[in-house]
Length: 339
Ligand SMILES: *Cc1c(COP(=O)(O)O)cnc(C)c1O
Ligand code: SF4
Image (cartoon, rainbow, N blue to C red):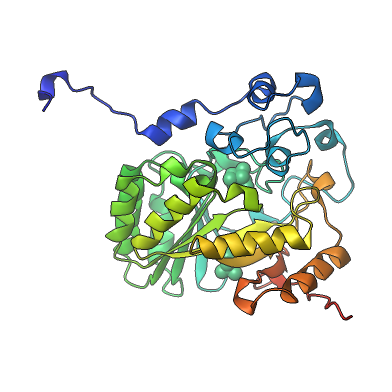
């Protein structure tokens, strides 16, 4: 054993190190993929490139049209102004209950736990979210916690962001303990893409916290393409499942990435293999800079119909859209394929 005096003061976890080593410049990304820089067609963006190397490792080398690459690479298509695409497409600014606390639906509210993400997804509807105004980074959850404690109609808190698993295990533990003390809460939900892009985030400390959580935990992952679901992610899912959490997945329907019935069906199959059930297939939120990812409604509904025609019902995600004033997500009816 190393004497305490020579132990480094702060041993950074492996995932934090990998996060620090994420690729943030197109040149490095091109080199990692064995492509000339010009082949990427990257542009500068105020929402800059950011992708962990473990996610890049799942991209196909030499393929500038790779579906995983397309999700993270800023290109000229983003710079086109398009009518109907704005900074706050869901009007979340009107749903604020307290700093960092949003509520639109009965019984559940969203806690913006952090603004940081391991990856910058080009289609993200919160890419222009005014996080700084939410006081979400410091220790200032107190107002949100007080608002939750004062509202007995809330049964479930959804940790969102940013990516809540960007928080250290210590901060998650403290937040989870604060929430567990509120007697009317029945569930804790975590919406995260971090285990997907950085499977090493699923470390012993996180697993201990989940295993010992007094509130039952639901984790909603965010996997968009079957190529994201490799052995490292399957292993991370198995570890998460072993703690007793419920694992679901949401996917954003993205042109040029997953707008294909065979790709979506394969995604559902691989999710099941990893012990994850598909939950939602989201129609794109019309955030500025994401118009090139739009799949028109009719085509989206046909894709949903094609999925339903080839999979058991429990492997078919619900095709939904988020509308600013609706009391729940709005289901887009599948168009069934008749032969
Ligand atoms: C999507 C969303 C939820 C979760 O909705 P579920 O149908 O329960 O998954 C909760 N609050 C807000 C503000 C949301 O956008
Ligand atoms: S991980 Fe989620 S919140 Fe973060 S950039 Fe991607 S879609 Fe947005």
